[in-house]
Length: 422
Length: 133
Image 1 (cartoon, rainbow over the protein chains, first blue to last red):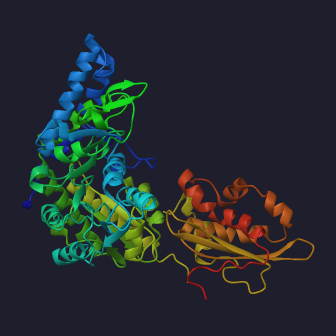
Image 2 (image 1 turned 90 degrees about the vertical axis):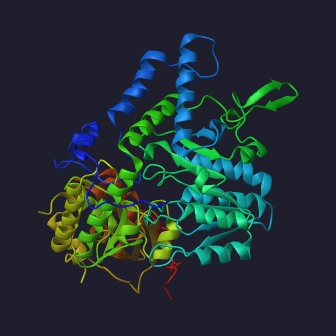
């Protein structure tokens, strides 16, 4: 995928910001809110809030259950939401779109269902060291159950992994599963998903792509990627929490046993047993996140109306402004690839300053960033730091906010970094 | 201006801490860490045969709040009996530290308090850090 970055932003950010009520508020210190914690979760436009409240107010009922007006209207909106997701991803069929509780639940579903059916002692699961815990721990649990091995691809000092490193690991280890993130939630690295998927398939691996930091920020075409599974969360694309997507190729999903058992996922149940239902309900036991699906569809419609190529270019520009500003501050170390090759995620440390203290300093100036290990402890161990600060941008962030973030770090360094133990 | 939890008093404890370092005559010692941020604190206690904390020392790495709180704590517990230290409530350290700590930052502050309570029950075993010889 090639995305060109224009020198000027194509988005009318001020008009976009009018759609997000929370962006008008102040922080606890009274300073205007500068929300740079989008890697953790994003804010919601009025369109999403109203789509969800409209459902609760006007036509809410359980789906696929009742032959009555409300249930039929809810079911229709719920299935339109599935179609909206399928279109966003360019899925070949809407039955390839499974509603889950989030990215974590989606990966756990694959590890439990596909993993237990296909992985045995001595098999290998290949990950990258840059994975979120959600794409590590489910495989470690699979290893506990089966005795399989887990291997990690290393990242270089630029936050990248060369194709020959990937090829060497695949050739040597012949993993059953190659599961990797499309965009690192710490480094901002954008990994070449289509290329890695092709390599994975060449060596017989099934491929899962953690697209939690990709789908909200760039055009994604699952057929062009050709991955067997692609997962992402609603709340990182201006949608609600409690909903995520497991995309799977129809043939792969068909071959898998169900994971959770209960209502909706069955064709029939008797005292002697049950018969599994069809896709996608086969993987949607219990009452699904109905209103959340409707909210997610409204979020996707909103984000697509803004335009994912323009969003990607804008975020890259914001990251460049932030990195350029940080590079002038003494003692700052920014992790990840060069600014023109990364997503809108900027993780850094300041010599002699603890990330929590940096975060607190920024909060006093209204700037919300995340401090900690960002659910990526193995990566932080690899980077040699226990924690980092992370500014993560979205399309509603302005160029001025990125500049002010850089100025605040410079001011903090001047006033505070000399206050250290002697 | 530095305000609230970064008040001058706290920064002074951070820059010039009370009883920071290893106490070779410690009778009780252990360390605790916070996996969330990698901060750690070790508390060394010199306890008399009568059960009184003759002196307390700390070492550690971490944010201003966790390290300043450790300095405040070791200054305060000297002279307490072991039993009094065991009963010394977390809110007392929060009060000594001062107002303005959010619930998340209270955890940073209380790392030293958790370590003190663990150290009271580590009379002979000296828990070395993984990278310590």
